[in-house]
Amino acid sequence: MSIATTDSAPARPGVIGWIIGLARRSPTFALGFAIVLVFAVLALGADWLAPFDPVQTFPFAVLKPPGGDFVLGSDGNGMDVLSRVIHGSRYAFGISLPAGALMVVIGVPLGVVAGYKGGVTDEVLIRILDVLRAFPTIILSLAVVAAAGASLLNVVLVIGFLDSPIFARIVRAEVLALRSATFVRAAVAVGNPPWRVMFVHILPNAIMGAIAQLPVRMSWAVRISATLAFVGVGVQAPAPEWGAMIRQGAEFVISGEWWVATFPGLALIALVLGFNLLGDGLQDLLDPRRRATGK
Amino acid sequence: MLILRFTLRRLLVAAPTVLGVLFITFMLVRIGHQDPVAMLAGPMADRAMLEMIRTQLGLDQPLFTQFAGYLWRLAQGDLGRSWQSNQPVLHEIIAHFPTTLELTLLSVGLGAIIGVPVGLRAAFRPNGWFDQISRVVSLLGFSVPTYWMGLMAIFIFFFLLRLAPAPMGRLSLEVIAPPTITGSLVIDSIAAGNWEALRSALAQLMLPVSCFTLIAAAPVVKQTRAVAIEILGSDYIRYARACGFSPRTVRRIVLRNAVAPVLTFIGTQLTSLLAAASLIEFIFAWGGLGHWGLNAILLGDFAAVQGYVLTLALFSVFVFLVIDLLVLLLEPRGQRR
Image (cartoon, rainbow over all chains, first blue to last red; front, side, top):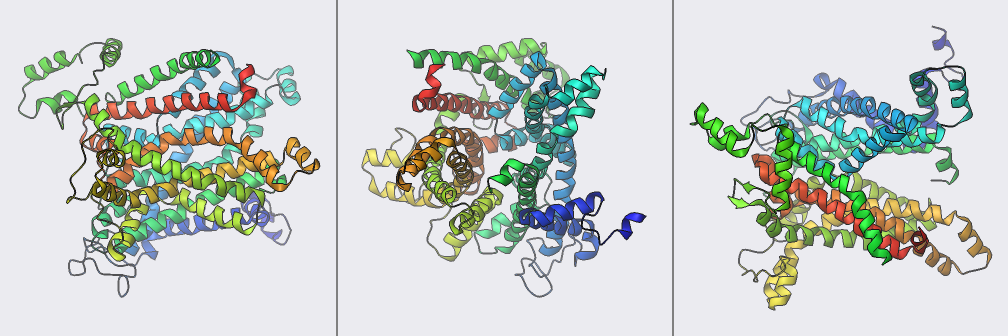
């Protein structure tokens, strides 16, 4: 409880203090963090913030332009676009958070083990990474989700799996550089088992690059899941998912009802931009070399 | 001689990758929740008939035998038959590929022509006004979804301004298409001297290429800038400056040294852009390989999906090889190895 009383101190302890410190040093990070925070609030408070139920239809108010009761207009089913955009942030986080967690959980240990053990393990990993690199992520995830069935769980699993090699690669490179460092040799010399050396001694020193990459990959997850829904393989139509909404609006664009497709797209861009700025800012802050060259 | 040896070695290194690619495309169909046998047989089939089809397709064999059979058929150029068109998949791919390649290469080329100078200019004055603007624009290029940009372009330039033709395919319906030679409408209409078709083809290309160029240019700007900044901080540039070379000459040295890394980067981008092309084609009803592949994925046309994914992956392996060769020619340092 003493934490609360040290409020006026320049460096606050804990995660919040760390974030405030980072935001002070990097405007990029601050802006990205603010954008992501806004969407997080929208996602958590969607039930209270949205003026209407996102799937409630108003049969007499189909394709109403923005303004009036429907601030951002209504779509072809007579549903409120604003409410649907707000609720869409739930899908964005609901997919990108578990997918991001999955990428880290799969990719980081693989990278640590491959980097530390070297030899055959490393060779096999690099080969797999090479193979996966040959496939464009969008098409591979489309094909896999289409084949495995378009469920939310499958979308998360596919995005998580396909992006985990990126984390393996980043962590592996860091571990490779640390493998023969003095502190690692000391840890081995005092009798630590290999798993302890890898995950207690090396990992904390090799994880920074992966942390900075996480928001960028999460923005990717948001984009890919929306793309899947737009094409019609991901989250299905009446659900208020941004990609699915753009798909619904696509047929009206050519006849001039622009608002159905435009607003979910803008929300998508804003969140993707937010995640990207967050990642860029983190990278500047965590990598002293990049800071020195003045970006 | 050196190039031949290098190519052979790179091909050997690429072989396991190609094998992995083949295995993944082979497995792609088998992870499905849909049973291809049931889909082929239709709802009226009884159990005996299902078993018969299963045996016919070899799906009752062990996985390894099936994979070997798949490789054997591939070696003979047999990619199976697409059930939506009842054509051999290989023919469909050959028929559709030039269309997508025309769109993609045009956009990537334009993206590089715009992206490289912008990235260089931004790097020469980091954090200047030009750098800030180019940073914001390229960040937008990263964040804006391909298909959404296409839709907005259609709304603005077709619906509002009436500048662009209707986003329905590669040629206006009123124009007679030139005979197919290369598959690229622009080249074919020039070859046939059909100027009306050329004009229509170019007009139809305008919107998709503009959207696609923006998407292709954004990462090029970012990468070129990063590469140029690194080169500008190097000792040889400091030496060149100390020698009193004019800024113009220094820039030329930077450009010469940036060519190889930037080229490599564009090569790695080409695959994902070829994939992004499918979305652009989807929006503009383009009917190229991407459009065809996307439809195959949506309809569950297994042989076609396999063929499409395989084409993309093999194309990227091929591009990596070509880029490596180009870099070898451009960078004398690499030739000593």
